[in-house]
Image 1 (cartoon, helix red, strand yellow):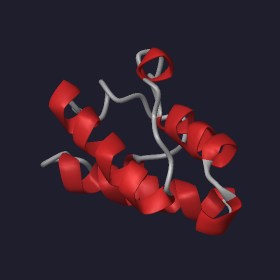
Image 2 (spheres, helix red, strand yellow):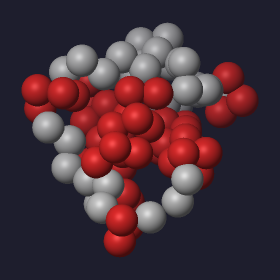
Image 3 (cartoon, rainbow, N blue to C red):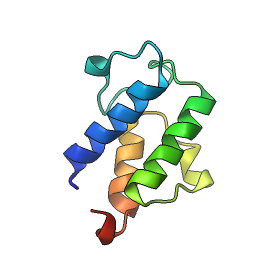
Image 4 (cartoon, rainbow, N blue to C red):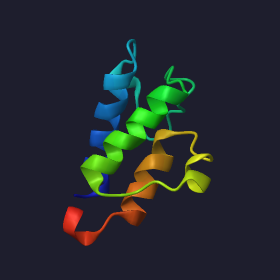
Length: 84
């Protein structure tokens, strides 16, 4: 799975979390607060991504996530080759 596919899937997850999130308005630079995602939405988003991409998000790194690209980059850098 390449970075474009990761971005597409993460955007799908975000769209499913936010009740009024317009998927066409979501991109890698989108900030979570601007998308209306609260802390519980973000936690669920990370659980979904862990399950789908076979990664484990580290608490110390996750606290610095502010935008969609942060999740995409983390997945790209931490997933095992078997989950590609």
